[in-house]
Image (cartoon, rainbow over all chains, first blue to last red; front, side):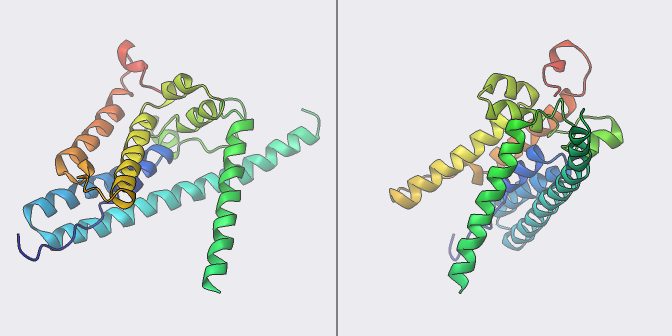
Length: 90
Length: 135
């Protein structure tokens, strides 16, 4: 119990947001790492928990950034086509 | 300088979020195809756990919560987790309580992982009780 390092962030909320709001299964990878953060921490493997935390963060950010990129590209491309169609009277 | 930049970034962030929300309010993703289709579904033909969340967002913004949940039940889980995080945060910072965060337990995180993977598998089964889960 003595000098227990503080619990690394599991980024669980970020992982769930990226899984549910982007359609990228990389969010699942992030949740798996979030689970590992907690189980390693409970087992006392603090270095492992810290590493899993970094991975959870990386995968969470990768899926959010990927999702946002796909979204922006799609809205610009199809949005332009949609506006053109509206202009020409459809 | 740093503080000023921070405020600008926040203002831009709020404008972007409001803009995106109004897009989802005014445009129905089932009718106007400017929103991306799920890349995973387009590539594999298999629904992913997030499929339907854009249609759900449209319904939610119009106050049709049940319709929204029908597109993607996981939004309920997301709301639950975020609400709980907020509750623990408010309790521990503003009321000086020591609420134990259940999300720090590996059993709870593992449970959430299992729920999401089960949801993923079941919503792809093309038979009656499971088709409710499909987007």
